[in-house]
Image 1 (cartoon, helix red, strand yellow):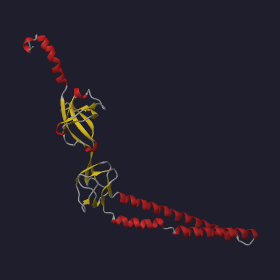
Image 2 (image 1 turned 90 degrees about the vertical axis):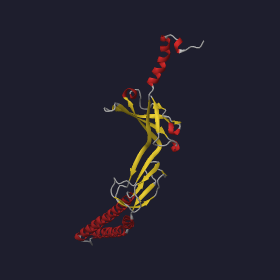
Image 3 (image 1 turned 90 degrees about the horizontal axis):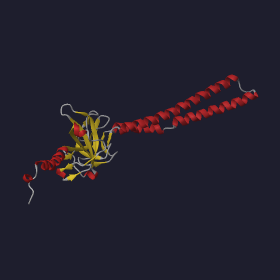
Image 4 (image 1 turned 180 degrees about the vertical axis):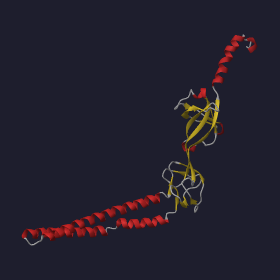
Length: 270
């Protein structure tokens, strides 16, 4: 004869049902939405007129890739002048030749002095001329060094007019068009996101959050993608929000080849 709930003793029925109820109560479903690992609004360090946009929305970019550039025509002209000065060796050559000439004169006068054919004041004047020539040679060499530094300074100034990608990512929005003015460093040219990892943020009741630790493995399920993804707990906030009584928990999801989309709902059982 089949066993029905009515035929079971009350105590036995309670013993069978209670574990199931307790198990359900211990596992609560929490949901959040995937988001990029990083979202960056990028612009150049200096203001200026936008000369080129080298990417389009949706483009994948690599670290160091040029994304945009401001006009550098004036600085390029300054760089050409600085380069000419850097390569100029005329002053050093002239100062070197004069110093050698002064050295030769001093050597000859000292030889003549031994024979009694050179006056003391004549030698002193020659030695002074030699020191002046030596100082002028030092000045000429210092000027060459300064010109080289100025050349490098202008090159660095030009580099500040280029926008390069700090990450491997995807361009999701362009805020400027070519010929527009970038006013200041808070004026974004484009938005770039990093999608090779995604972040899922949950807000859990304090008792549930206290059972979690950084590095724990979890398996969020994303219904819209029909996928269960392995994730690692990145952060369990040390603070409980006083208004909601919840704790912020961040989960990192590996996303090779942008397999999973950002912005989709995922659920986790704790």
